[in-house]
Image 1: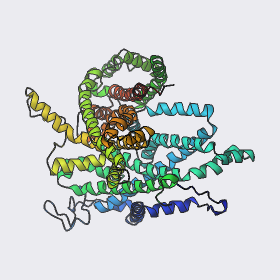
Image 2: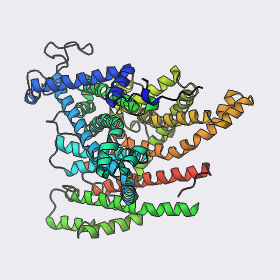
Image 3: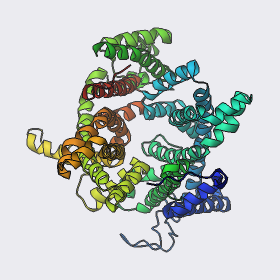
Image 4: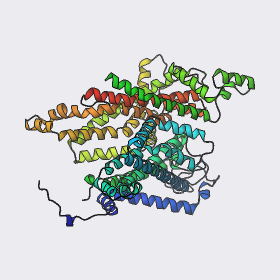
Length: 308
Length: 321
């Protein structure tokens, strides 16, 4: 194999944003996923703003349990059912689904924002300074690892008498920062020994400036992949908690609460429109998020890039 | 070897203390308690006070904590406030079901993961590899809950292949041991398959990466140049070395399946530990809740430890520090 020595003058420095865009375009699936996810987000946020939460939750006692107009199973569709049928309290399923998806996406992004802020600060500091700080932090994280997280989340959930979106975000945030913090710490340790950090130190740059101005930009790609993946995981755990009966109260629709409808035997066997759309929407959201996240983490790792 | 194991175990003691303290304080802060349910609606305040004293719930929290921990060390997890029986007895019944479930999910995981890992590694970059990686990717992304609900709907309700939930058919008389066993098997299939499908991607990734790494190593090249058939190389040389990290991961896999079963058990109304945990927390039966959470924490610790021990046993080059 010939190895060409690159001529220094020829090397082009490509910005990370360009690598992202190139990587996503190189992977058709990721491109489609990005469009799907952004499309769902826009639709759901604009839709929820247009409909309004109060309108979506309004009861219509003359229009209970109607099948969607196009429903092919059982007794067929009902003319007053609308696109996705109506709930046992006469709410329009399509409107509830839009509000629910908006709430779940808000929960996912809030958890992701909080946990990544924590883990970036923590990971960078313990990874950069190392030594005793690192030792203590790692022992604490080792202890946190043995905690049965789902169980503690459920226990904390029962401690809260008043429960809403904010509390749900806090519960999901509680343990979600540990994994990313470890990852960022390891990446920082890898960056710390590189020449550019040594060069900055020789120039007399302050440690804080090295951490946030030199090392952090080099981790952006990996971090954005973590952000995206945390959104997906949080939506998944929210669904799980809701289905086992520890989710948001009924007055706050979320995808998890809609999926929990499946536990009702009548809904499960005859009125699938009460939960099936939510299950499908969750699958679409989570799979598309993961495709985008995968493309991002490939962009972060030059060896795995599909585009060259 | 024994010295290092003992040293590792000593590190685990503070971890257990932190876990037990955290759980105890959370239980202490829990609103409402099961004592009033135990006393009944017509109990006088004196009777309630007597019950509180009988369960050791009087006195400041640190006294309660110390007596709780010292009882646990002696193997006494206290009495359930809701069932009125020793916690150990209640867990003893449920743990069998959970073991049964995790046994089958482990078997299914391995049955799916080992061939998939080998096939993916043998055909790296080909369509077989790409479709297996796609399967791994989707199984890592999809939440277990969504898959469980879809599978109940499709396989239990529409196709009617499996029962919708429960652990055993209650209509069979306990005398018919064989039919009971068959019915148990039938009930455990769907939940354990769901657990296996969402949980086996890690095993496939590890196995595939190991085999790919080992295929490029010098001893495989030597074997190939000596004319050893590809099959023999794969099964005799590569597999043996690829199973080392796999063996280390096995305890984690089993623990993951056990802890992952909390939600699955509830959905399939499978009467295991996870289901017991959820129903106990709903009636604020904190001795049971804490005992189960402690048990799961302890299991995780044992898993991490035994993973390291297995690693040193199968690969003498690695020493635990």
